[in-house]
Length: 169
Image (cartoon, rainbow, N blue to C red; front, side, top):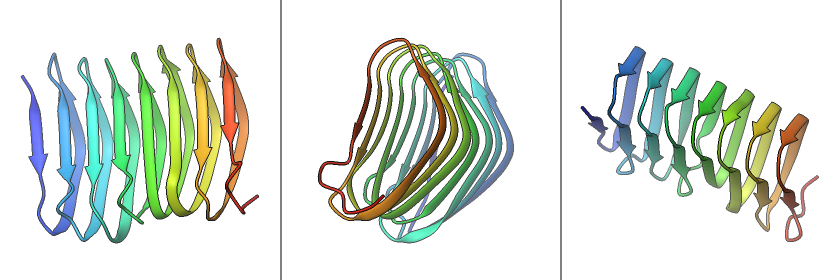
């Protein structure tokens, strides 16, 4: 079945391993003014959705494997995100806002599109070692400052990097 975690204003959550055999995982911290989340290993055959609210904090994860889509909505958050590895058999979508920072070693095995959307961020620093997508790969920056470091990317379709409104590097 599905597994849902709904967190309050001081969003603190830690899990060593979450494994679902057929359901979806939802971690809803949209009511949080801060986020302190630590995830070591998430796996399942369904979709994984992580949602964060306003404020700051730190979110870290080891290996996140979604059998379908992976979605992280941090469009209203200024937290720092550090993910070792994200894989999804569907689309991978990461939305960043505020003064966000996102780093990760790899986004792999995405059978669909990979989208990293920081268009609403006032400042976004994004560091990724490797991205692999069967679909389109899109990275969008906002009008503020920020830096993007991408060591290697592989896509079977289009690669779009849109920093046309950004004053970063």
